[in-house]
Image 1 (cartoon, rainbow, N blue to C red):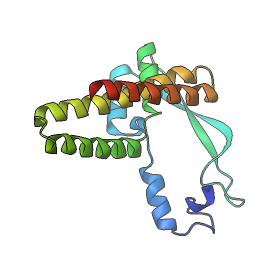
Image 2 (image 1 turned 90 degrees about the vertical axis):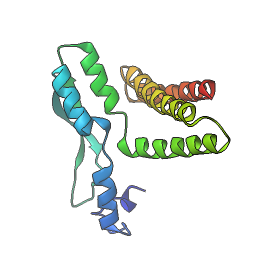
Image 3 (image 1 turned 45 degrees about the vertical axis):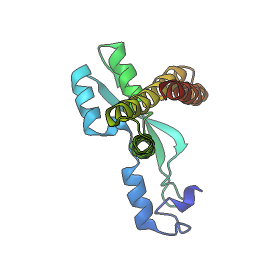
Image 4 (image 1 turned 60 degrees about the vertical axis):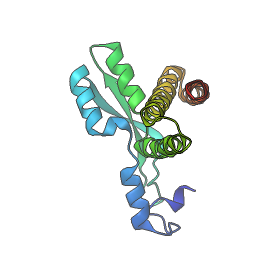
Length: 165
């Protein structure tokens, strides 16, 4: 699968589109909000080399993933940075689009617009936050812990979403 979205791979059907996707595949930490968060919490970022193959890896281009390490005066700052790295912007856009459809449907079914919008905003923000927080807590137990935490967060997000409906 990696070769199909690696613009350097001969198996990639459309290198230009693949590069566009890779350029847009950033986390919340990699946005202006991340820059502002780093300033507010005085977070320092350090790149760490890993032995994990990057998506751009080929036999001719042996690139490895870089991990990020965060240092901040407060534990909340470090935790926030780690949570933001678990929140992909593309995922937020897709979630927002899905939630917008649910809000429009609720309004079509005679729910007051302000109530439908408020419930949609609560579902969207709580789902994003719960998943990121649980994934971050799980990350203290390694990569598998992070995945388990994300899964638990997704499950809790579903329960919260049902409660809000």
